[in-house]
Length: 527
Image (tube, rainbow, N blue to C red; front, side, top):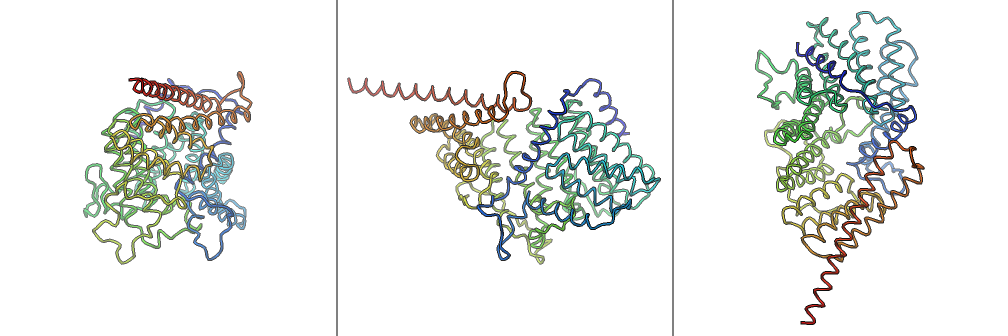
């Protein structure tokens, strides 16, 4: 009944909403940009390789197989295995195709991913699958994946149709196999699609946000099917808290999927200014992510090979989920103008991010101990900069932390973090990177505001303005933007133009302050 009500809500809303029509050329521009964006996101937690990318055999290859590089190696290995398989209609061959499609999706290669999943789906449908449960589930999984491709590309109507059909087919599988030993995995798959469908409807504006909340809750109930009520009381569910007993019985993929649902709910609540509820939801997800990390052994953390299952989250991803959730909590506090709490959460995120880059996991002997192996708190004053091993995520967290500290009267400590962030950004992106300009604007506000160091503030704003103007010229020259010959560069150029106007305005205010100080000094001398 819950399933039918959820779909009924989404079907009704489809009449009210319409997707903006894009040309095929515009769609391709978006698709081409996604791979670059995904690579940046995947690399945010990794230390960039300097100079020659060749790694000697004796050199620690940890950084090479993190994030983007790990997925790329997994794709190469999966492609090599697939090429050596006999091309036929076997489920093994089709699953290999689907693995390739999933890896291309994770790397942001949208066209390749779509083509592979379409080929796999066609092969399944043409092989007369009948009532074979595995084949039927693979068909639904292909449809879900095609929906995910379209959703990421902003093609919401196409995505909705694929998700809707995936939900229908997964519900049929559950209905026809209620007594199957695999029933929990079927419910998990259905929950996965409900989560994606709710997120899609939130993006396209097709659901009232409270209806979307209901669909997210429905997704979590399906994913925890079989773990909520147990006659032996072996697994427990306390309110909205998944206990440690439950986590120990779930795969990392299962845990991270539930974390993802709660992450989506938290984001939705944040967007609608439900700050306390958003923080509570993110905290629930954080507790779950921490439990997942705490059970990792040394062997888990050092598993940097490319032979892992495609759907299995890497230790790198599991640790980063903790950091990302802390950042989200801090962001919500900042939106609510609770800067003390925001600064504390940013400090914790920064501390965990640096700690995880060095952490080697638990020993097998210590696994299962009651005490937490993760630090309880971190102090911003004790988090030193190691620029050689710094990441873009560290730079971003430090900038946000500096902003929060400035709001609570700790300008000097805030400037320390701004300076550290600026150093990282210059080293990774170069002196003319737009992120350098953003940090300079923050520093200028602190120098020109509470510290009243107008000369230093003026230098910060002028350098930022120079970078913004250079970036705007670069965009207009490369894209040839003029008149109606604009589409998705438009948003970026408008944003940069806004930054330019802010920089010019701040320069004017600082120059006025300098002039006033000069005039006041002359007046004092005359007296």
